[in-house]
Length: 267
Image (tube, rainbow, N blue to C red):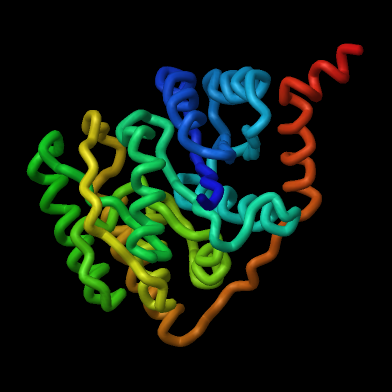
């Protein structure tokens, strides 16, 4: 069974964070928690949680950069872990929000599904029974647009619960811009256009609906979808560079919180 690494963007999630981390930790080999400039107690909760386990990495961003850039930071840390031979190209990365909308108990089941389907990317398809109608209509429009631009028939392009093989990360980041909530659209479009095997058939139930995006956010996402397509079409790639100093600092500070390291420091 490949290793499973969760990338969790965190921004002011102190109400749900402790509970969701415990549920995710039982499903994965490593957690990469990107604290996106939280102003509440989220970072303290992350550090306390790392004290209890030795598989938690905390990447701390001083200022809020938005969901898409937090995901990008998490993906770059995945590439750093690959450089350290902690994970391999066929291991599985799962992105999941810290607000509790998605059920972590799906993780192992979907990872096995990805393997069985021989897929490179599994983007889950949400049960929209708890969503308002305007949100469903907006999702259908953005999904239809992305299907046209990506050349792949999607049913739900904006789900935050997605599974990717590590080998897909670098090719995706070559065309990825990352602004506000554009991560879902960009990952779906680029992974399809780069020829990876996609699956968007696995239906997941959502615990609750949490409003957070606006109509203006939808326009930004739509604009970035076209921009990402043009970047891919004309091969306008970005250099995927890893800030070794920054990520080494995050790696070492995270390990210092782990139980064995703390015991050594106390001697």
